[in-house]
Length: 324
Image (cartoon, rainbow, N blue to C red; front, top):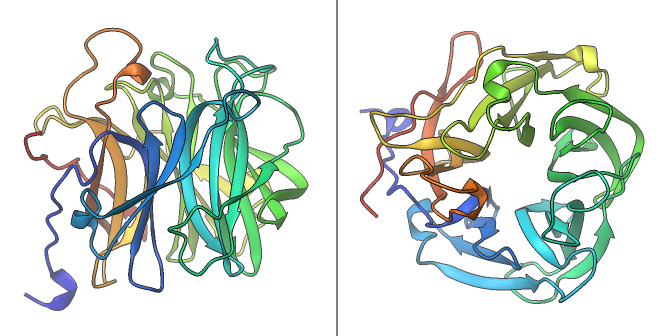
């Protein structure tokens, strides 16, 4: 077996009860992990030298929600990034636990840390990421391309039927959007509209001359699945016509392997940096009753994925997990 074909069998789930998992592998050799913490009142960072060690590795709660105000409830989907020599965590927070609509509920925020090691409590609130209209918004991610910083996120537009669409903007700095903001995708296919009409949780990987953006659609139960957008790396990423969209989902539940609702993913590399890894949350069973958001059994999973001859990501089927 060549080094390039080394098999990685991750001990899935790699972290229990952490929906919306985000993994960033830094130059210090550590994997840094964030995800939605059960109870939705705090942000934690985990770090370890291997993905399998994240469950029992270093853990620190670096930020706690205040008792009241715009960031006081439902802390969802934190992501940790290293940009321009500083650490940033992007997340969504709500001013209430009431029904979601365009006027209350989630907005997007960011905290900053200038220390070399982010495992400390020196995080500074940089405030809300302000978009061109005020409404329910969440699941932001950031990527750099050819010296430009881009921000892509999910937001409700009351003029468009559904819960959320995908948007993209350039950034003046890691906490400020600048210029035009482009609508990239709305829930239009049947698989994106089961339970709720949703496009959310974008994640970006740049390979083979293209910008690939995965995202998730439908309700967060077993119907949750991943879709794919892509654009040529030489195109204007703020031009909606630069982007193409798969009509079919690219990663779905596996009845055979008892992995349900895979989605809200991030990308990282194997420990030897030779292969690409998708990190995603999924459930070990279908949601039985009630709002699936209140069911904490979304766990973080990791598996290697591959690339087709045409240069597109191929995620295959969610792999069977250990007994929990």
